[in-house]
Length: 465
Ligand code: S5P
Image (cartoon, rainbow, N blue to C red; front, side, top):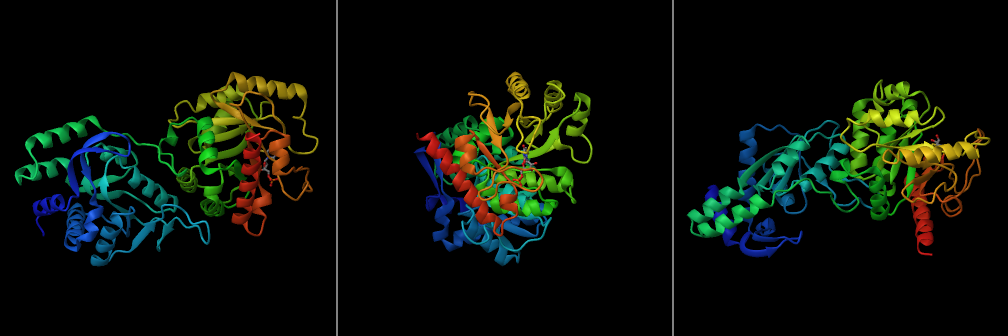
């Protein structure tokens, strides 16, 4: 069955294409229903689909080191291409395991390998993008994807936005033409479908499962936190005060499902590079957590603008959130907010209201009042506080509390700890910032899970009172 036209007719005959009136998952009524899953029951057809896909790959001169099929229908197709054309395969899990290595990508790969994504049908491109984000989070390059069938609902442009070129064997227009020509459907039915397609163009949707918010790039940070907390059931911010970004990247992949935020200090890193920080950012998108650079800005407006946007770190380009002292006056916040106006993703900051360290000069009533005033004035950019108590009844401001440990009361350098329960119940914390309690523990993943569970349980208990 080398002829593509024969294959289309065969697919119609095995009911991979159905025409009528079908309610889609989205609730929309569609005149066409396409389900390529049936091909696994017809080995000749399955192989023919793979052969045609490979022909397109040959013609397009794509170079790649491995192939990753999007579960499920594309998996057998990917397997055939990999075996027949001797390419290694990767598999992206739909969910990470709760045990063992928690790997999201199975198979062997090297950093900067190029992986081709295979999918059966593309509508918006969201599944391909979800797969690409996971691969990229592992340092694998994704530049091309191939689909058997393009519904022509703007998937190609959505993928282009993510720097992925879409190759395809067939478009819906070609299928309709072929089926009319072979008298399987009437011209009228074909026109109806074309009209439906024209009216149902897609944009990149937000994905579910707490993993990847494609539109996270446009959802305000405050709202993102609320969604993450509910979907992932976590109010834990891991504070990774490690000096190796490589190590933070590895750790963030392991604990990504457990945290709502990752806090780092970029100026303590021995191996900072924009490439690596971009990788961390991709991981934060894959696992849907916020990235907080704990820069604690504390200078005049002009200087903080430069510190925020320039230099080695270019913090504004990657950090969803930063921390800020209001010591120099509210101009500091105005200056920071101004410098991210041209960035097309939401940015926010947390004001340091009260510190956890012994004898902190911040912990004075007038100072805290000034911080609250500033927070209210710049409430678009300031999403909340770093604090040791609840400072306002306005729940839109997020209270993040550091100085958390389950079985320690402090360190030798003035840090003071309370337990997660004390922080949430006693002090009104929304987010627990936990550092060495996790990073110094023998099993970081397990400890992280413990803090996540403890923090979220206390939050839920209070919510249900
Ligand atoms: O008052 C504060 C504010 C902050 S942001 N007290 C703090 O400890 N922090 C930060 O939280 C601090 O810089 C460190 O990164 C983290 C606490 O780390 P831990 O190891 O003591 O939990």
